[in-house]
Length: 288
Image (tube, rainbow, N blue to C red):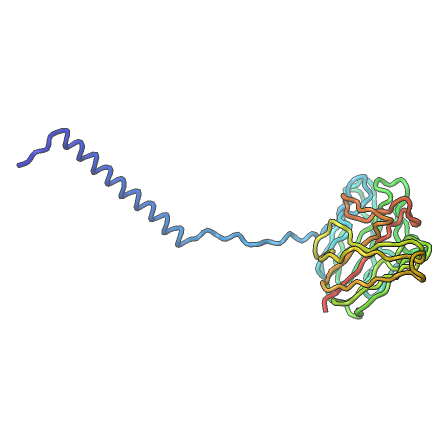
């Protein structure tokens, strides 16, 4: 009978161990592959940004952050007062079928909060009547001197999204003669409608969107439009802008305002006739 030497037996044992180890590794590998096939890795899904339903009042700034807040109908909005003084929040004196359909007024003590549930769609323009004033001459909120972000007023807008009846396909706005201001701060039309601006002032003015906002606020760029004044065109020039995408459009005149990079708001320049009130406006475009 053939006998293996001690050296040969040792080599054979090593070879058998290697084969056995290889088989075990192969089995483990195929088990992992089978597991991966049976339970594939979850595919990341697209998630939308969480809905913001809070307006903050930062300490010693006399501002509402964000300036514009868009929420669905029946949303409860919370105002947080992180300041060291009490603030008063109240809607402006303007009312229409889409502007301030509900009125409110309340105090928020330092370090406290206040909530309101909005059950009517529309735009709600509010301000702090202790920090800013209501200019009855031009129907605008005006900042008081000495506030930290003067000439920015302490006002804000809640856009409650939902169906609103009574919109037309067109609206007309104008630049007031002798004033660096639009006649109407808020206009509304339905989708695929247009807004016409007529310049009754001597100087040229511009209409362009305020940077820094995302849909549904300024959902698409409308371009930049120059409107010649009465010094250039007898009676003043007009421009018409068509709005095919629903949303809230926030615009300003770059001749008399600049955009504040912190708040993304139009801020009046000292040379503007209505300073500290900015030359800004809003177009609400409702879906058909």
